[in-house]
Structures are given as C-alpha cells and as structure tokens.
Length: 296
Image (cartoon, rainbow, N blue to C red):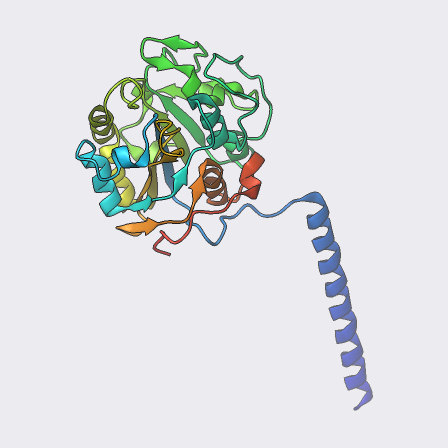
C-alpha cells in the first residue's frame, strides 16, 4: 500500500472511531434522560383526529348483536370489534380515571371529587406537553370549564379531566361546541353524553340513537379522512365479569375486523398514547397496543 493510501486509511479509521464514540455518548444520554423523538409506535397508525365516546353500564352481550343497537352494530360491520374488552372495577368513576390516566387515582366510588386533586400524568397532560391538541366535549356541562358536580342530566363523575391540575379546565367544552367542521377538532378528544344519552338512565336504543344522531356524520367523515372513532363503555352491568363493548371505526380500521385478544382500559390508553409517540401514564406502561385490526 502506498504512503498516501496508508494515510487515507488511517484517517478513515479515525473518523469512524469518532462517529462511533459520538453515537455511544448520544445513545447513553438518551437512555439516561428518557428523551426520544415523539413518533407513533409502528404497531398502530397515527389518525389525524381521534374521538373517544364513552357509554355506561352495559355488558358486551347487551349491545353487540342486539337489535336495540342497530347503528353501533353497523359500526361493528364496517369497523373493528374487540370481543374480549374489559373494564377494571366498579362503580363507574374509577374506570374513567383508569382510561384517562392509567390509574384509578385512589377513587373508589362515584362521589364528587375535588377539582385538580391530582397532578399525575394523564392522556391530556401528555398530549399538551407534546404540542398535540386535546379537548373534551361534555353533554350537559353548564359552561366551558365548569367544575360543577352535577346539573340536570350532567354528572362530573364521568369527566375525569377535571381531577387533574395539569389539564386546563378550559379544554373541557360543552357538547354544543362540538364542531360541524370536523377538521377543526383537536387531534384527540373525548365525548361524554349525559346520563340519558350514555345509557345510564335510558335504554340501549336511546344511546344508540344518540350515537347515530350526534357522531354518525363524524364516523362517516373519519372513514374518508384518516381519522378514528372509538366507542367504549365504562363498566358492564355487574353480571358479566366486566366484559364491555369496544368498537373502533375509521380510515385505517379493517372493515369487519374482530379481535379476541383480551384488552382493558389501560391497553386502550396505551394505544392512544402510542398513536402520538407519548409516554405511558400509570398502568398503560404495562399494557399493550391494540393490534391486528389496522389496514397498515
């Protein structure tokens, strides 16, 4: 090998060593700090908009396949049905906290909690920290950001975002503020019907009609605009092992897909987090993504 060739070879080895050292140092810093680029997990898609609507107190068999829920079952036909979806506990309120924050936050009943009692990480605080838009739409809420315990058929026990000091109360809107131009929706939002619309005080048919009337147009739009509708329940009727309906419908959901994998609220939370490259709140860190139902 000539002298000039030896020199080039030595320089190349030195450069490679410097790059390897830099990569090692950088990798070590990322591992230590926990910092990482925010990006969706490869197992799940990244919808442009996701709307999660939560209904109340019905078991899987009371809704899926029922003639009282024709619209919701049409979403099953055109979307994905999780046949082994489960809530965590009873009564209602702890399940909402579990779904939203990966923990029941010590809540064990349906009593009216103190606003902002927790500063624990949750879906909204993670979205906000990542610069991803968030909002909730609450039927019967007297005014945007109101922390009242109840008003008519409205009940705050179904609205866990008010329990967190790291979620602006202004992000909680009335359902009348749900936009007709769906492209203006936050990237992720929750919709909570009132005590009649959510099947708590009224029938499955009433709730099914509510869903079609209020979110049917969004569901159709979502199918054509890379967006997602998630329909789930807080808990069952206390007679079915807490097995609940959970249906997903949208642009990247396989039509007619069925999953018999066991999932719970923590898994759904983790899936929503991973769609946006977020950290995992509470028990979502031990959960798993909903998979096998996506088109890509």
